[in-house]
Amino acid sequence: MENLEHGHSQKEIRDRLAQVPSQNYLRDWIYGGIDGVVTTFAIVSGVVGGQLSSLVILILGFANLLADGFSMAASNYLGTKSEVDQFQRYKTIEEKHIDFIPEGEKNEIKQIFQNKGLHGQTLDQVVEEITANRALWIKTMLQEEYGLPAAPRFPLKSAFYTFSAFLLFGIIPLIPYVLVMNNSFIWSCFFTAITFFVIGSIKSHWSTKSWLYSGFETLIIGTVTASLSYGIGLFLHYLLT
Image 1 (cartoon, one colour):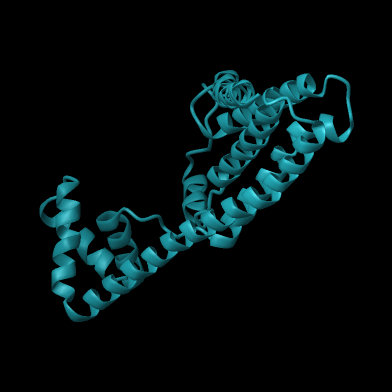
Image 2 (cartoon, helix red, strand yellow):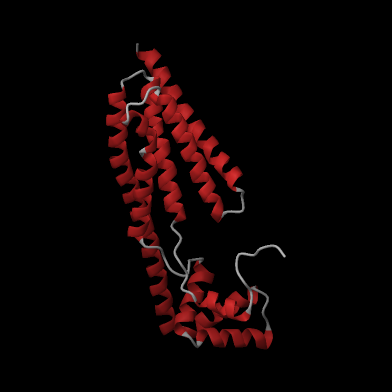
């Protein structure tokens, strides 16, 4: 039998469903990591294309790491906090409606599960079981009526993962210039390409794509972005000189 992601015995199912849903911050990590590499290497490519000095690369590169990294983290914090505020708003609405118009909310639960194909005594029993538990009732309404997750993510964690990934991966294109390596731009291209591929490969663990496909997909997207930046720098150099 093919290896499955988890077991299906009664105990395994019970234990798995009893766990508190974990918050996934993969999106923040991937978002910060890829953007860190892309923006930093775009600066490197643009400066090289414009035929400016390595000192300019280091100054602009590290300035971008801190400023843009913080900006992204702050934006992600505010975006995630908006999701939390929305979650709390809808939760407050449902709590108020259950308190003041419980029959109307029961009818909503009934309609929700009727649309799922339940009818008759089975439908009535499901409605009674859910509405007998206030917390479950509110949770069901939030998920089924508004399409919200079981619990919102933490804004500070989202910001932290975005900022740390941005710094961790964003510094890689600058390493050859920090170490004053010969052919620094070629080494920067090589390190950046490897980084794109690694990020894409890691991302595949949470998708149905193979690590090879996901790695090359991310590599191609990053290469196109970097090539565009290099071309713009080269064009501006010839335009202004």
